[in-house]
Image (cartoon, one colour):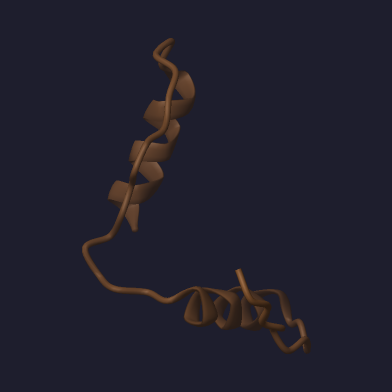
Amino acid sequence: MRDTVKATILAAETEARGVYNVGSGNRTTINELAKLILSLIGGHLEPTHQEP
């Protein structure tokens, strides 16, 4: 996690522009991420799914 935060701060402070791909090396699905965020903020929502 510290590496991801450090990379995000460095990306924000640089003058270079573009897309940055920062990852943890661990596979995390969007569903897992949504559930984690909801648990951290005390949310009680269920994610909805839509066709692309």
